[in-house]
Structures are given as C-alpha cells and as structure tokens.
Length: 342
Image (tube, rainbow, N blue to C red; front, side):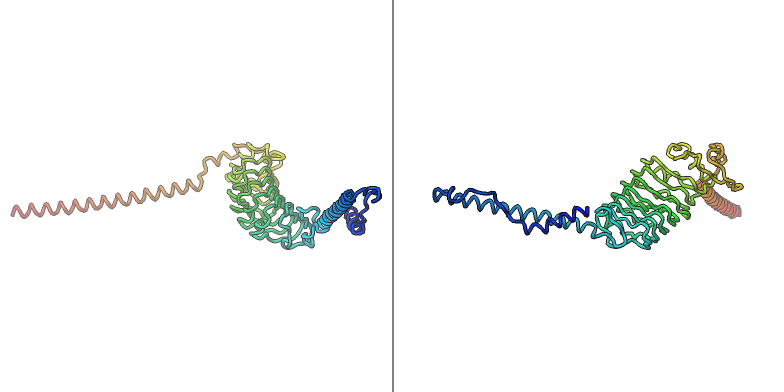
C-alpha cells in the first residue's frame, strides 16, 4: 500500500508538468483550400485541446481523492491503539484503565483484552450501534450495569471472561437478539446468575460459564435460550443438594450440548464435601429431594394453619356468644314465670 501511495503521489506531482501534445496534423496550407475549410480545421483543433484539458483535470481530481483517502485512513484511530482496517480498533494489552477516547463511531470490531478496565459506561453502546464484536476478556470488570448492553442490537460476539464479575443480574444483556456467542468463564468470584439474566437472547448458540464460583444454577436461565447449541459449565464448585437436582436432570437430558458431556463435571456432597463426578450419580441420588418441602409448600402450610386458627377462634366466639344469649334468655323466661305465679 505504501508503494502504491508513493507512486500515486509521484504521478500527482508530474501531472502539472504534463504537456498536451496533439498528433501531427497536415499543414494549414494543405488543408485550408478555402476559408470554410480553415475554420473547420481550427474548430476541430480547439475541441481536441479542450477535451484533453478536461480529461487532465478529472484524472488529477481522482488521483488526489485516492491519495487523500489513503493518507487519512485510520486518522480517527485512538492514539494508543491500532486500526488494521477502517472498522477495527485493537487496543489489546495497552494497560488501559478505562475505555479509550475517540473511538470511531462506525467501529465494528473493538478489541480491549488484557487491560485493567474497571467498568463500562452505561451509555457506551448507544454511540456504537454498528458494533458486532466486543472483546473485554482479562480486565478488572466487577459488575455490568443493567441496561448497558440493551442497545447492542447488532452485537454478535461478547467476551467478558477472565474478569472479576460477581453476579449476572436480570437485564444485564437487555434483549440482544443478535448475540450468538457469550463468554463469561474464568470469573473466580461469579457465584450468582439470575434466572432471567439471559432473557431475550433468542439467537445465542454458545454460552461459556466454566471455572467460575457457581454452586448452583436455576434451570430457567438455560430454558430461555431456544437456540443454545453449546454450553460450558465445568470447573464450578457445584453442590449436590436438592437445589442441584433440577440442573442435574437438565444436564443429563442435554449432555450433547456439553463439550465433554457430564464426564468433566463434579459436585460436592453436602454431607462430607467430597467431590464426586456427575457420571457416578443418577436420578436416584436425589430421591430424598422428591419429598422435600419447598418454600412454597412451607408458605402454604403456614397460611393454611393461620386460616384454620382464625376460623376456630371465630367459631368459638360465635358459639360463646350463642350460649351467653341462650343463658340470658333462659333467666329472663324463669323470671317471667315466677312473677306470673305470684
């Protein structure tokens, strides 16, 4: 490209010195046999000169525009970054603590891996509506504000792995319906994923949640991903309690979506903390959980008990009132009889 640019600039410099030469014409005496012939000959010669001058000007303009385009390519690139093409900004490994300034508005691939970025502004993606690839792995992100990614209508790839995320709350990704691959692995403090964290990600095919701090995961979070083809969950400190029973059933039924099936996954027994491979467990391992009362069951029992108690109190009060009224009526009747006998 540099060689082409040098050649273009040399051609531009030489254009002003170009002389317009016309082909050798017969002498005027030979052609101008009459006055009319001389006039026609001069008109033709002048037309050729005008045409060549116009061609010269147009060629110079085109080459100047081409040279300007080549010279200004990447001029909006942030000072600490590289821009290998007009729609890619590579700021990887630059020691950044925040997002760089002057990112081109038409950027499509933004590479920010291997830095120390602490947070993403909540309105960041509002300006970059053409962004399809965002790499933020290996930074210092501790949380993502809900709604930050809600405007990323064209985002296809998002890498948030190797950060310090602690939870994925509801509404983190908005409804990024174009998102296909989401990396959330290798966050050593990530211990909670909301059941509605992935709501609206209807096109998501690959989800990575490996090597985090997850001891459990609600199946509803995975059931909201109709296009899911690959999910990575290995390397988490799963606990084989009753809360894990539904996830175990889902993993067995969807083992084809796990890169290594359930063979590469383990969980801790709630009794002694011993780690066991999931491949050694079965549905019978969670048989006790089938008769375990849930929180809803407890609330129903408590409400029923309160209702019965209130009904019993009201019945007792009604019965006591009835007895009291009957006793007063009986006393009044006896008094009337005694008065009538006297």
